[in-house]
Structure formats: C-alpha cells, structure tokens
Length: 415
Image (cartoon, rainbow, N blue to C red):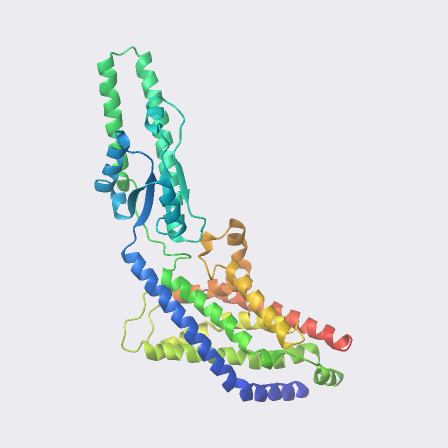
C-alpha cells in the first residue's frame, strides 16, 4: 500500500508537469470541433427553414392525365409545402441527382397511361442517390414506399370494382357514374390524408433534437480526442521501473490504478473547464432547448459531475488500449482507428437510424454507445442509477483487462 501511494504520487507529479502541454492541445481540439459543431447547427437551421425536397419528373406529360395530376400536386396537395416537382429530361435528371440538386427523379415510361387504362403492369421507376445517411433521401424513400402502397391498393380495388359492375350487368351510364364516384372518393381521401393521424414529435433520435444529438456526439468525441493527447503520459517504452515495483510487491492492479487515476483526473479537469467555460459563455443568454434547466455556472458544474461516469468509461477504454502498445506510433494508430470505428458504429457521425440494422442492434452495447446513451440521459434528465452503473461496469472491465495485460507484460520477456 505504501509503494502504491508513492507511485501514485510520482505519477500525479508527472501528470501535473505535462498538464499545460496537454491542456494547450486540448483547447485547440475543443476550438476546432466547436467550430465544426456550430457550423453544422447553422447549416441545419438554414436548411430546416427552407426544407423542400426537389424531385425530378422524367417523361412526356403532355396530352395525358399525368399533367393534370402533377398540376394538382403542385397547387392542391399538402405535399407542395415539402416537395417540389421539376420536369426534366433523363440526362439532366441524372446530372442534377449526382450533384445533389435533386433527391431523386421519377421515370415515367412511354405509354404508361394507356397501359394503366388497359389494366397493364407497366411501372414507373423512382431513382434516388446512393447516400442513405442523407435525411432527404431517407424521407423520400419512406414517401415513395407509402405512395406505392396506395397506388397498388387503389388500382387493385378499382379493377376489382370494375369487374363487379360488369358482372352485375349494369348499364354503361350507371357503371360510369359509379366509377366516377369511386375515383372522386379515392382522390378526396388521399388529399385529406393528414386527417388520418396525429403528429407527435419524438425528436431527431433517441428523443433528442438535432442539436442535442450532436452535442452528445460532440462530448463523446471530445473525451476520445482528449485521451489521444495523453500519449506521452501513458505510453510505456520500457517496463524497467514497473518490474522493479513488481518485485517490491506492487502488483499489476496497483500499478494500473496508480497510472489510471491521474489520467482520469486530467479528463475530469478538462471536462470541468469546458463546462465552466460554457456556463460563462451562456451567462445572461437563453440556453439551447436541448439543455435541461441549469442555474448558472453551478448548474453546469452539476452536469460535469453527472458526466463523470461517461469520462470514467472512455478513459478506462483508452487506458486499456494504451496498455497494448509499446511505442508512440502504434499507440496513435490504435487510438485513432478504434476511435473512428467505435464512433461510426455508435452513430456519432451519422444518425443511428441511417446505419445498417446490424449496427443499430449492437450500438447500445459498444463503449461509445453506452457513453452516448448515458450522456443523452443526463441532458434529457432521464439518466438513471442503472445507466450510470452500466458505464461503471464497463470501466471496471476495461481496467481489469489493462491490469491483466500489465501482469502478462511484467511476467513476459523483455519489452
């Protein structure tokens, strides 16, 4: 225990000595990522204010019922508030789709109207971009699926009703009148579809707004980046000192804790400074909607304390990764590659719902996913003891792995 205290004191002094350099790099990272974050928020706000998805229409609409339908969509249907239809030729539609000027285009083949009138199976084709993480593309994919279901069901019902009228041996005028009535009812139902449902705003993802979601992502990324700045503090080029301590009954667990505690302290201090700075910046200003009710700087300090389990988790993960490396280059590569992989898989770069289903399933169980969920719970006021306990359990597991790796290296050959 005495040797543990001495080693902890020595590591703490070494950390304090390196802290000014660590803090300088940290401030640069915070400034750079903050600029990107506020730029993202501003871009999202400007897009949201003018959110109309542009869709191209390819095909000859003249002298057909299609031009009447498109005109009705542009002037009567509520879709005109969020969808803009543009008539294009196919080459221009492909070009504008590749540049992102339109989100997709509908290709109407020649003779489509005659085929529908005769009960044929000719189909329109909807072409969209190959960027599934773009919100406009995701929205249009959902809209196209809904429109397709409505058209197919309406077509089946119309042809079935027509056959029934013929079998009923009704006169042509009666059949025509009944079909016109059915058509008007279909059109009226589709145009009044917004009366079918109630709208409940659930947020961008996980109950968070766009700004709240990426603020949580920002914090997790900050913790990861802060850990990479501490390379000189944690990379062990030789374990000579540690073997001497081991021979004096300072085991792998004691060494791990004595090195980890100052590292965790660095990240905790940086988090406190970040939120104190945020408290000073927002003093006298209205707080963003995604933040809970905070009473000045002390409220931000309270959030800093609540976020410590997430810092504990990320720092324990990074310490374990550092324990696997023997030099600065391998440490940098391992930290950066693991940060990118875990951040993408947890939905920190793109919204989680835009990722493959397999990633959506495993994301909450990843270290970055667990940290993200805990931070989002803190910001929304839904964090629980169980979620905090989950992050602490992750931290214990990673520290246990780090101690095991240290034990193997101390008992192993020369490194």
